[in-house]
Image (cartoon, rainbow, N blue to C red; front, side):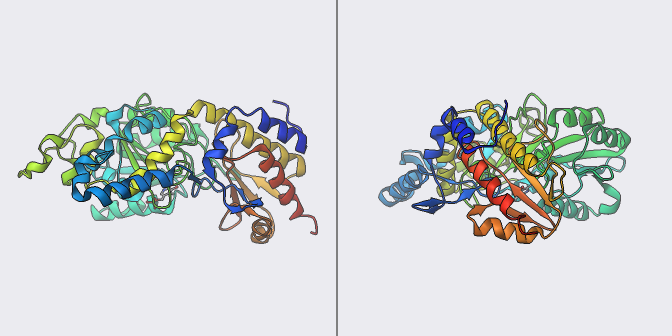
Amino acid sequence: MKFLPSVRFAQKMDREDPLRKFRSYFLIPGSNNKSLIYFSGNSLGLQPKSTRKFIAGELDDWATLGVEGHVNARRPWIRYHHFTKKALARLVGAKRGEVVAMNQLSVNLHLMLVSFYRPTKERYKIIMEEGAFSSDQYAIETHLKFRGMDPSDALVEIKPRQGEYSLRTVDILDVIRQHASGLALILFGGVQYYTGQYFDIEEITKAGHQAGSLVGFDLAHAVGNVPLSLHKDEVDFAVWCSYKYLNSGPGGIAGVFVHEKHGKNLNTPRFAGWWGNDEKERFEMKKGFRPAEGADGWQLSNVPVLQAAAHMAALEVFQNTGMSALRKKSNLLTGYLEFLLRSFDPAKKYFLIITPEYPDRGCQLSLLIRKNGETVFKGLSNAGVIADWREPDVIRVAPTPLYNTFLEVYRFVEIFKEQFQHR
Ligand SMILES: *Cc1c(COP(=O)(O)O)cnc(C)c1O
């Protein structure tokens, strides 16, 4: 695609965009006559217009049915976790039995670590990327300490080479091989939250398995952003949240993937609650936990229906398109952003794009601002851009293919340029 730096070109791209109708499915922040340029779908995705109706439906059923809603609601509450499976399985490339929506991401990560971090005297090391999201670091740190281990011995963090910002796959695979004999678990981001790097899930998983390790991914920034094929790639487990690219609302219900080879093995150790018990006898309240087959067997509590209703509304939008169409537009949209930014500052005097090039990224670009980054960020905010600031010097911008436009990308770069004019 030959990009041009003009309003007319951006408008033409929008007119010819096969996904253009999806913007109208969302509520775009801003006042009536001036919408904001919302490039923070990687932090909190926008609200689908249908969300209110889905939640109101459950409130109505609760009002008219009370407890009977568990069975008699239009979408019976005791079966609610089944209703999101089809869409989730499609988004992450899994079988329906391998996914379930439940809890929040960090909670789920702990549950997965209970099951899949099973250190022995010889095999106890964990490999992660350096600078992983704080919650993931804390989860790992406390699992190690809980088991009486020393994180400085057991945890191996992979860093980029000197002067680089992202990890090379060859280096990741090398570290895995080096630690092969002592490795228990690899936990990696799918898309790194800070740099936006999209890791090679298939290669990392394969190398991990060859080393005799289990391999899990935190897909917070990957799900709904990049294509995933967790089943085929034989990933052991994965976790994600639903309020970023999945647009399911602040604090929305999260999700897990457990590969069927573990899900079908009812002896896989876990922490249990009644909702993970075999559904057929859940209400018999018998002694002795008998896990349901598949990811369902990791559920603890009954489903938070209002959050799950918002999740369903958002997933329905994805069911009307697919990750390959979204990926195609995402590449163009973020590619256009990259093109305009590079044309503005070819010598990289003002800023550096630390996100790798397509295909090793999703829609986010992380811009390392060389001087007074926070002032630049404030200037953007004052001009109606919603992006995000990450200490010490990075602005993350994420034009999302479901609701952002090429014209917004063009306008954003015009505003961005202005921030450097009087320096
Ligand atoms: C957003 C995000 C989280 C957030 O965790 P919650 O439990 O949803 O608060 C965790 N890990 C990563 C990598 C994230 O990007």
